[in-house]
Length: 566
Image 1: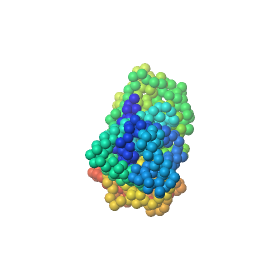
Image 2: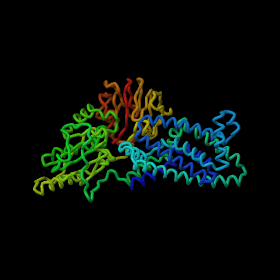
Image 3: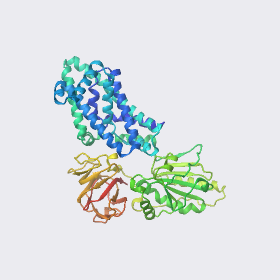
Image 4: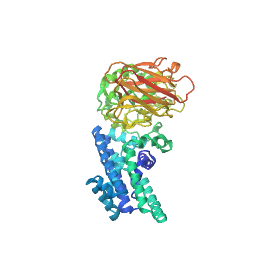
């Protein structure tokens, strides 16, 4: 029920989102018509279109993204026609017959007869424009739908999100109608008001077509609802909290793994009598990496007493599905306990998991007795391991009550207790706070530039980059990425498309990092991309303040996925 509530609240908040603001003129343009025959069909058409598109996008892959893009073009064309018809139907008819004539007639019928069909069609068009709007809450819903496949629950969550947005837009529609009515009576200028609304509609189409809705409006913090949604998730959902289960459920089966590493395939029967810690992780996830020192220490301390740790490697990026990459990561990280590659999310779905990392403690009878999401609560988890081991040995196990004391190094070190920038994805599917003035050209190479100065948490491309859903690939030598960040550590998930070592150089505020260099660069900021993984580029030794980071690539072929901070 909580996620349903969050989905509805997230939908309500979208009216303040930058990508929704240009859509509002299309809503207000109908605000003087009957709500039942005009406003309500618009909202229903919009909500239904969004729910359908988002459901398909969650499971349909890149072809649906492309189809939705064509749908957006058609929607913008239709709304442009309607806007021109509001300004001057006669002029629109002369310029673009017969399509504009059809649009003018549709607009005229909707205005004069309260056409439900016309309003519904307008709602469908608005739905195409609104579909790409996303925040952390919608991202959680879409991620769950993508991992769990198409089902009624995913569709319900998306419909609830759409209902929340329709509610806020409905309130705006009713309020706009009253304002419109008062202005008509007070000024006696209905025709001019209609033309003004038509101009707003046309301006809205131009704003969306040029990408200004996310590029310009997102520069204003008060128009960005992502932070509000993220705080709502943290406060209400509390993903990093531990949960004690009142009636322990049985551990789901471990079948469906793509491959087992460090061990032959394991199953529930083989594990009966053991205490099992199931760890969902992926090797480029900084939060997962920071839990590894504890997992490795527990494995060494308690394996002889009957603890079995199983790492379920559920990939976030496509390169994490490659066996060689995962094997290399396991060697580099020093993991010796069993790891199951869960490329199809079979085990992830069986556990109904939603987080990296996630820890599930299973007793000797195969019951889940404890679970924890995210970093932290290490002592609490270890105390539970001790309790379940004693229970498995019927209280006859001699074991110290002391908990392990560990300190990670490099990327596995615990995060600093300070304000830090948010995780930032470079692919267009989850991209936020990009400050390059050029609009993103999806899946095609484009020359980008960086502004002279970046605000905190803004970043920018320089050079020729091809931006895909989950990454950005440098297509010509001399490219760079800049980020105005805050945090002790800066990491970047990177790789090389040609599998050849690639040079890079990083700077802090225009100078070599010196003592503030990370584990994967030297004091002069020089480093090499050797494999696809997370690279620690900055670890500040001085006071943590906002700094401007820049990474330069003298050669083409680098591929960047996401920034994370510690």
